[in-house]
Image 1 (cartoon, one colour):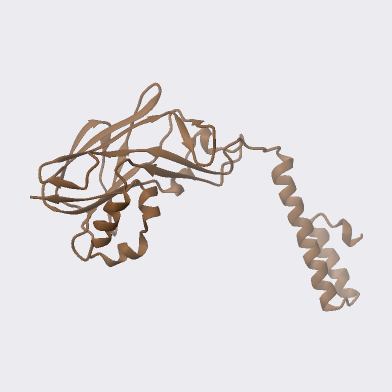
Image 2 (spheres, one colour):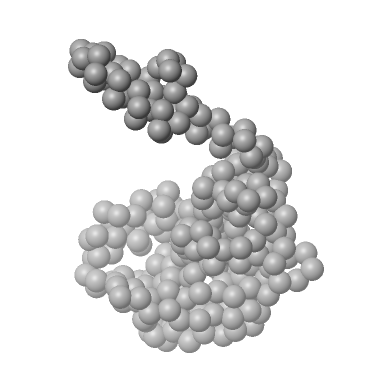
Length: 252
């Protein structure tokens, strides 16, 4: 057996024993091992892309969807008793980041969660005094160990996904809201869109949100004026924007 023809783990082990028996210098042994690892890795990679003929679709193994969800009216000051609306009419041909074509998604779960916190104090208040109005779709509450989020449930129509949820503010404060989807939820999700090929799932699916009410001025003047120091350290404007962030003040 020649070292250049190693194709299995058993052959690799056998060849390693022979090399020790021949008392190869350590540097030559290391070099041989590295060549062998490269060869085995090449076989594995070749098989991954060639053996199952998984060429994939145009959207790739790492797919990022862009969902438009707006909060209206688009303003940075509200009065106690005002209603802010979460509204979306998402076409089933969904935008994919860095792709000219859109992906068609029918019967799809975006796992969208809405979050809101009052940030006037030194810590976030994740359960401010708000009443919800369900006009189209539904909203639920998900208490977490360190926060609270609100899963959103869209209504699927023939050509789109729709939702319209109202937030009625019952007390004044400085508020920050946005949207998030945990990519881990797609790992065990069974839908044709999560597959790169028939039996091969994409490595990851991420969702970014766009909101007409996201603006730099409100972020700089309201969000960055918070007394919650860790927020200013952890969230920059790009992150705020990709989460469809909206920061505003509610007055009496």
